[in-house]
Length: 268
Image 1 (cartoon, rainbow, N blue to C red):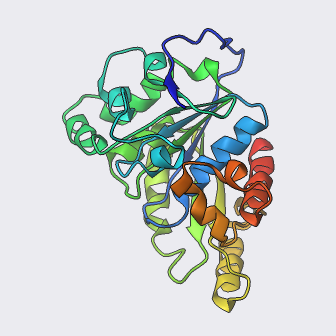
Image 2: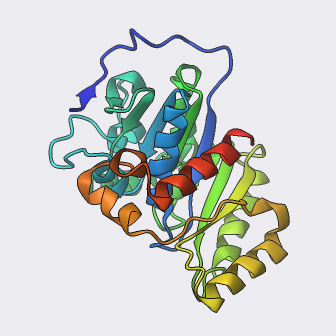
């Protein structure tokens, strides 16, 4: 079902470099990986050449795209610590225009090894420079922490997307992420922009959920996406089948939500 690219024979170098979208939130369970998978798939369906990178040791994006984490010839560990050309590490998915660099638990070791490395914060950015002119979009799914892996994702990114669940304490803790973003902007990556805050797991029946949306829009203004990702059973089922929602159930509200989000992202 999936093959590793040894050559980009069907790829044409592009006049413009890929736009790198980093998806991060140090809080887990906010729909970060769900967003990475489904946004990447929808952008690819829109015929934009896309590379999805799983930078999370939990590697849920990898299994969510149908990869067997136990039998990967190369992973994001190799992207960060191997000297092989990046094109040799890229896996082809069953969605046209969508490639991936998968991950497994070895990324935990990668983060430890990077600590001792000179220029450790810029490793990912430097490595992606090899393939940025093969793609329209590169999407990075970061781990739920503000460690060295996430820092590499922020330094490599052009734009940050922050999923926030519509639940109690949803906005609490974002201050720490924003401080990290400001640090990156003032030093390692001045070009990093806040692409948007994405409200996820929204249940319109709950007053609290509506309050979270109002509070987010009051504080972040137009940085909050108009699209809201509602709670949806089919959206929750899709990863267990190794498929993005547009392949699992194109008629579901989850698919509609992510198609709408994609339209917003492509206008950024």
